[in-house]
Length: 355
Image 1 (cartoon, rainbow, N blue to C red):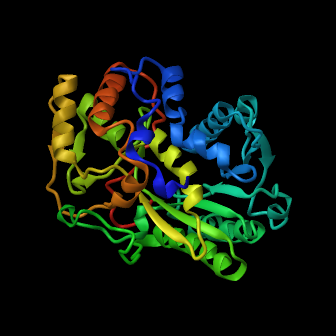
Image 2: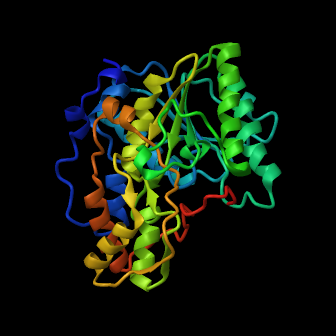
């Protein structure tokens, strides 16, 4: 069975016991890293080992733990490597084989394990303004070095919906056929990262899936947390960027694993986000009702936002296992309960490409 034939029914298994609320970080981490049945099945038929390159950050640790859990449930001997330039002690304790690797070191790529399957997550966004050259080096130069080292393997390479133009909500969002039109140096460098993988696919036979994501959310960061915190604290919510897509980070990670089987030469593109276009004004009011707060709304929608149409991903993988209404309720309870956040705004409101 390939990812092309995964059914919506099978993607929902293992998620029939979702709680009404998430009580603490331990439960949150368990829910985030819980693999779906298709991901476990993937590990049974996966040829070769798996490496997550760029395994730190907000999503990488969740993905690594999910991959390890899927291997364990599958009962296979697949090795899972975590490679990054930062300390990976926590992931080593979880069972990953850690590989220190700074791809800005020209010798680093040669030291990477020779594995058949790679999920590539190396990237830089925030702090790009004033350090544009470093952003280009991390997003483009590092990708070129990694892609050359991966030979004819297959890679699901994280990208972003910011490579598309800003879209109106009535458009339904950019599809995989929408031509890229990046705004600002961050988005341009992300398209550059894709082009490096494209080059080594055409030149060396590397199989690639460009995994264009916007926006992952969980209860400690993301668009929902950004809006909920402002509602709770009475801060004004700028409505200029009045719309957004979101997807539960656990669903993002499940789809990233399954995306390995979609990697192809020439490369494929897949939009990854939730099925709805959320209206920020309505979202703020919904949080207000749940939290007993009156949201402070400012400005007027300009009818543009980074919006993607992920109908293809939903056709392949089924609907999200954690739907948006539940995410909103979970987030309202989490923020009103004073539980921890990462304090890292997404800046979903940004339209000029400056981060």
